[in-house]
Image (cartoon, rainbow, N blue to C red):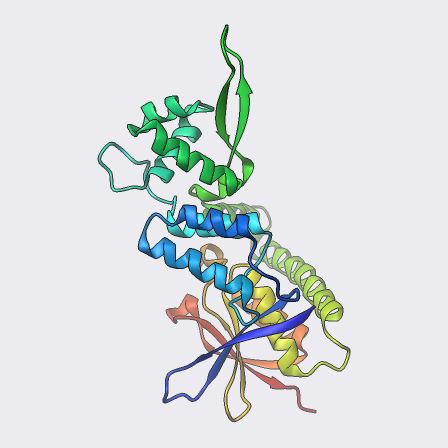
Length: 304
């Protein structure tokens, strides 16, 4: 295992370099099955470019961070290419056949290719091609069903992995749970909840740093690893080091935006948590909850 990085030049007037960091296995050739399945997903130019970029990333050790198994990566790319957080498609709606098939299986249950074709108003051949692509991606599975005399037929249905393609509202759920907690025990109980979460995250991240870094790791190395963890957990974490040596930890997405605005203590706990796991002084320079484009922290060594 080793680090690899992709350096992106920041705007010319800043002189800053931004790095994407990840733990990678030794580079290996692209797997034909994975490349083929991605090519099958390329129904538009944009998706074709995505598929091509992944094939290159598999061969190139300096690629952007990709997390998870091959199936999980394909799922993410299907979700990126055909976002599901939209109203259910209707006849004539501008949606892809793949999305319509997923909705048809979700709302109508298991079905044979000809039945799915009837539901979405498309040809059986086109539907079957998309079903096979979705099966390769681990989003649908196939089973045999006998119906009287004659050959059994294949029925297709969604797998549990496909649930992530449909709309979710976890932010509202978390907010309502915290509101319920506040109604029971007031602000102090809500703070207790955040403190417990703080302790759990601190233990998890500290263990990761201990497992992946030497005991004498530099501050820059620790910031890179924490940025990698934040990237994995939805924050689009990035580590940045300026030519003068200044270090910044950036979160380009707020993964808890449904909570951070009504409960500012969530952001307070995050700032304290990052400082503790890094053993450093953090100064917030930009804040998403206050209207910024990112949550950016300047990271400096602790002084006596």
